[in-house]
Image (cartoon, rainbow, N blue to C red; front, side, top):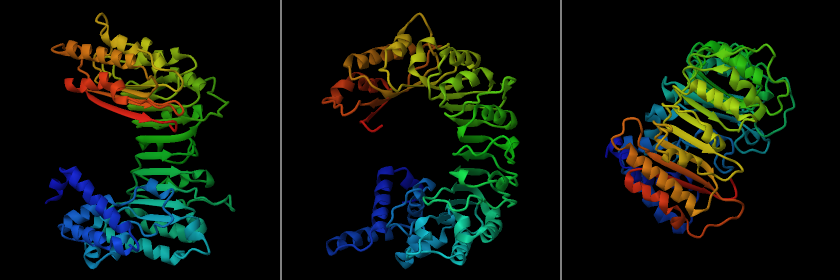
Length: 475
């Protein structure tokens, strides 16, 4: 079976991956599990090498899995494949794509004096060099987790990064670790050239100084994620060539200044600082950004009222606002100015009745935190006198709270009516999907979810893709 055929049969592929995971995570099986282990080993070994290599690739950890690794997992993929059998070792070493995501981890385990696998700086250098050699010139996605400078020293850390930086295309920095800092002057090595680097994600960088200087020499940098708000418009990074920026705890004035400097931004996510009491400068003028297509804003209800009137984004296609502004008019006026091109909208459900026409909108997500949902949206969709959101194809209700069957019947009637009215109608789109994320309150239980949801699930017969997700007391 070829790799293409295997991808086309996801059930068999997932079963094979589960078998592979069970095999590599099993350390010392008891006697009663020996037969099962032999069967799993035989099952994987009889597959063609290219299929085994594909399975290996799906076992590579994601960067987020390194934040809280299993304490017993000291030899992750692809390293573990070198120690199972000769065949697996040959397959793993023959596939350079398995070695394009090296992880350098410097947390309390690897730094502890009692750690059985504590690595010296020389061992780290040798480990990384062998990894790069096995990648055979392919661009790398490098993850550095923890305090590299504390473990190796600034000089050796700088030398290591300088040596291998030309191979790195994506860099994930998880710099916080879980230990207390003893040297507040620690910094990443700067003046390192990163000729291929396009994507940087920085976590907990507030423990380092001059972090932006470390990436001032990145001619191809396009994507930058900063999850601690340490990057500001004054940072010495190439703002004019950034296309994506993700920043936590950002001040309102910094949002405006970044949009002014980053002229090529296409996608930006701002998590506003709740402690931002300074607001915007009195002389702040309207910000016109010609390339921004996606905007995400969260936090600071008053801050939304302040920043939205200043933004003019003629290319905006997707808007996500997590909070309800203190004065909803600021949001509605913003929507009216951008309704012609907006295709995706994520807002609070209380704003539905005041939405403008938005002829290009295809996806609408409504969310709430405390209020129960009303039938405003579905009343407007059903109203024959108003062509409400004529291009709408996808509805997503997030944190839906109603447990009344009548609410689901109202949805079903409105959507069924919309479905039939759209038949042969050029100015009304046919709904393609409805997603409900139902939030249960406290320890609330529902005895008959099937009966409760039957009105909307019946829409599947009309061709609407229905997805229902139910959440308990832990949101």
